[in-house]
Image (cartoon, rainbow, N blue to C red):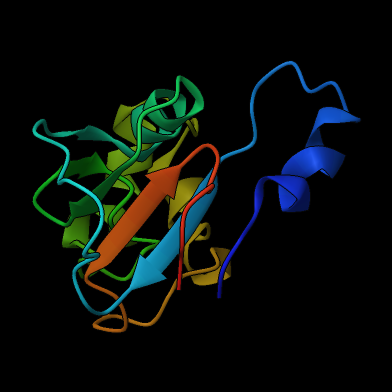
Amino acid sequence: MTFTKNDFVVLEKFDFDRQPVGVKFSFKRPDLLDRLEENTTLCTMLKRAQEGNAFYVDKNNLTCGSLPLGMQDLTTAQQSGEFAAALKVFEEPRSASRLYPHLPMIPKGSINYAAFNRKMESNST
C-alpha cells in the first residue's frame, strides 16, 4: 500500500495536543526502518515516535509492554498479581491477578517486531 501526504491531511484538522503515531506489528523485520538502539518502555517508544523518530523494535528493546504484544509469556509474578501490587497499581495482589485475563493481547508468536512512525510519507506495506 502506498500512502501520500494527502492521506494524512485529515489528521491536521483535529489539532491534537500530541501527534498521532502509526504502529505496525509484523512477523518479519521491517526493511526501511532502523532498529531502536535502546531498551525502554512501550510508552516511551510512542513518545519518541511523536517527536518524529521512525524505528522498529523487537522483544529485546522492550523493558515493559512486551506482554500485550505477544512477545513474552505471562510470568508467575504477573499471574499472582504480585507484580502490579508491587508497582502500587493495585492495593492487593488478588485484585491485580484478575487484570490479565481481560487485557487484549496479541497471540504469542504472532509478531516479532513493532514499527513506529509519526507520519508515513513513503511507501509502506
